[in-house]
Each structure stands twice: as C-alpha cells, then as structure tokens.
Image (cartoon, rainbow, N blue to C red):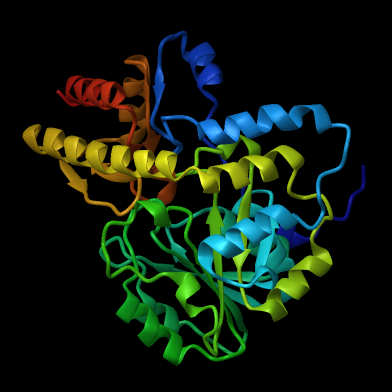
Length: 362
C-alpha cells in the first residue's frame, strides 16, 4: 500500500494499558493472582448499578438515549449545575478527544504536565497540535512553570488533579493564582478522575470554577470510585458555550444504554460510594504503616494508588512480583525507573502485596 500518513500521526506512541488479569496469568503460567496495577475498584461495581444493567439487558435491540437525558439530569442534580453544562463521554478519554478536535488546529500548542495521563499527549498529537511538556516539581504539577511556557500558540492546558501517577494535588490557592495569570483564550482542562478519594480539604475542585471568566472544563469518570471501568462512562462539566461545541462533534450514541442506566444507579448508591472511599483510606493507612515497617520509601497520595521507591530496576521488581501472583505497575515508562505504582486492594490483597514485596526486595 502507498498510504500518505501525516507525520503527527506517525509520531504517536500507542497507549500501553495494563494487561487483563487472564492474559497475565496465561503469559506467566500463574493462577490466583491479584491485580493492583490499574487503579480499579476492588470491591466491584455498585450492586444498584448491576441490578439496573440486568433490567436493561432486554432493551439491547434499541439505541440508547442520544441525549443521555436521565443521566445528565442526575449529574446536574448531584453537582447542582445546569444540564447544559454537562457532556457525556465513553469514559473521560473520549471527552479529551472531543476537546482536542474542537479547539486545536495543526501547529497549536498544548501544555501538559509530565509525567501524567498518557492519553493527553496522544489526543493532542492526533489533532496535529504540539504537546509542550512541563516537568513535575517534587512529584507535583508546577503551575508557575506552566505559566512560563505559555506562548501566543498556546490553546489548551491540562491539569490532572490529583495527578496520575504521582497522587499529588493542586491546591485551591495555587489554582486561583494560576487562573488569574492565564490568558482568556486558553481552555483549561482539569481532569478529576480520582477526586472522590481526596482527603486534603485544600484541593482545588474544578467545578467550583464553572462560572469563572476563564474557560475551565472539568472531567470526571465512573471508572474508579464507582467501579464501572468495564462499561466506559464519564462526563465533562463546562461552560455552555463549550458543551455546545462538543455536542456538534459528539457521536450521537457515544454513551451506551447499559452505561447510562448503571451510572444513574451508581449515583443513587451513596452507601457503595462511602464504602469504597472508606476502604481506600483504610487500605492506604495499612499499606503506609506496613511499608514503613519494611523501611521502604513511599509517597503519600490523594488517590487510590501511590508510588513506592524500590531502589532497584522497577521492571525487574514488576516481573518478580508477577511470579508471586501480584500485578503492579512499573513506572519506568513514566520516567521513574526505580518506582512502582500500586493501587489499594481488598484487605487480604493488601496483606498479600506487602508479603510479596518484602520477599522480592529481600
């Protein structure tokens, strides 16, 4: 074939997600493994969401509600925002893609923290725009350094809060000072995939700036705290002018029927959400204490995952942990060749992780 492929597409490195549990077990010949690598909810999905899915299965011959009316109304009620401020996505990843398509042209610049969620760069490059990377400072997003990189070509800035993979936050005062200095023509995208787990009350909340004179778009997901990663549903909260633009390019049935009914039910299941948050916070405290007793350095987090400095090749530790039936994430590809990332599991999974890590590092 003689295909003409734009250079900006060829420059994209494919996203490498964590492998499914079954694939890892087949590849390494192990069984009864536990996966603590993808920041998923170990409890499972909300029981109310599962029941809603069961009731909706008989309607799979019908297209979903293209407007997502019931779910948008529920989110609107939950956040006390207007329905016209909300856009649904097939996970928040799709919303990142919509934003880059709506606002970016080839040659435009987008400022990204590094390391952070890898899909930002992929979506920026796919629009022909140029990613401008700003290194973290003490594992946190350096908003002052971000401001220093703004040029006349800057069209968008991503702020992952809390940041993945470091678990750090941008505080309210930092964000407000940052907003004052950002030119009004730049779209600020605040990705809050892990916001439900934050314990620090000083954390900036993107939705609080919905009516700010700067364009702030907040992204959220049902994949983490709500345990619905498998059906891909997320949403964005933004000024109505921006939601109007996104709805012009949004595929009409992007949020599938099962995802919509499950998300509505999950928002109604406050007990499940509280149980999840309590489990994560208790799990973090247990893991912190256990790792401290082992004399291993870790980095506190505001998410359901955290980084550990293993003081040796993280890829080797990853492989050795796999042989113990424990799947974690090496941070080598994120620029931390001696760090691993682990998310909180069930209590017995956390205990097993600590024992495996102690054995591997000894």
